[in-house]
Image 1: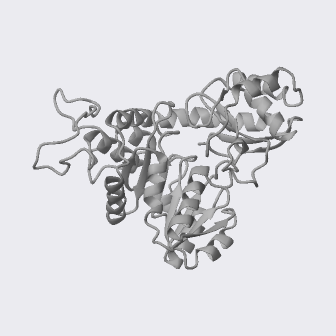
Image 2 (image 1 turned 45 degrees about the horizontal axis):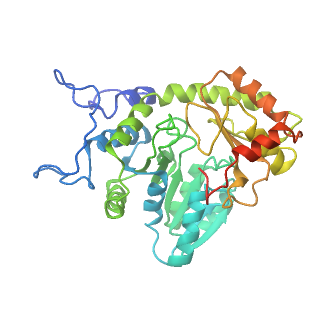
Image 3 (image 1 turned 90 degrees about the vertical axis):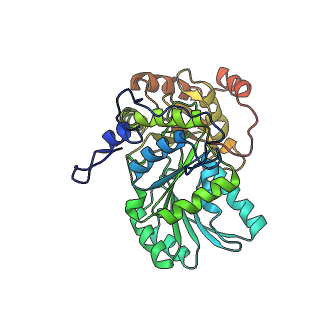
Length: 380
């Protein structure tokens, strides 16, 4: 985005549309083209396709402008997470939420086994407990809201604690997006996204991103990308940036739907609990009757898609404990709902009829057996 020093700060909706555009030149393209090149002519900063690509740069400029930092794009969210956790030294200490994305937990388990890293798991809602755990830590890692428990952290209080302890502070901002919270403004050093989710928003891209507070951290993260080779494809970066352009309007609609659904189903007799933090597009419901009842519900929808992702234009749901790596403190019957852009009445009607199968082992149970594949190590 081509700002002028005397120009007023733009609203995020405007930044999402205009950041990362090419220069405004006669007959110049409105969007950065897809650069399908593995190597570049000498004399510039890129040289080789593992070090950079103009299609990545456009995406990085736009997402970095929204988050307020310097962005590094990755081939996946796990690639982004891996690059941040690689900053922890051998034998180091990480503070992490007890309820985290299962891929993050799996990577932390691997660091414990292979590099002697210690992990202190905490309830991120308890800022004092996080502050105590941060003493002597190398990295404080936070999700807010957490996946799938939807616990919300006091990011600013944790930021002060991390800084006092001399620890790096990283926040996974995938659920909230930069439109709902800005962790760098709350003291975070690094922000992580699975750009596969709401950022790209159309269930057709796998990508990740890290946004750094300063140039030094950005360079360290970019070095991890270059050495590890977790680079995004140019077409993926193009599609992710195209999705980012509409993030404000998509989020507005999906969040309105989520708020309405959380209110409508708050006291539903088939549910033991409805978890919604008051913002965002994710709801977690706990189906009465446990795992079997929840699987019947997930297998009985017609509009909601039974799948293991989130943040797309379509509404998705799944029982999270079907993944072996999910924390055993997550209820067996918890179903995570990723609310999309459909009409809220259609979503409510479909969820209502699916909940009718919770206590009925008839067609819903057969559907659950037929449509639920054996899970791999972790969901998304």
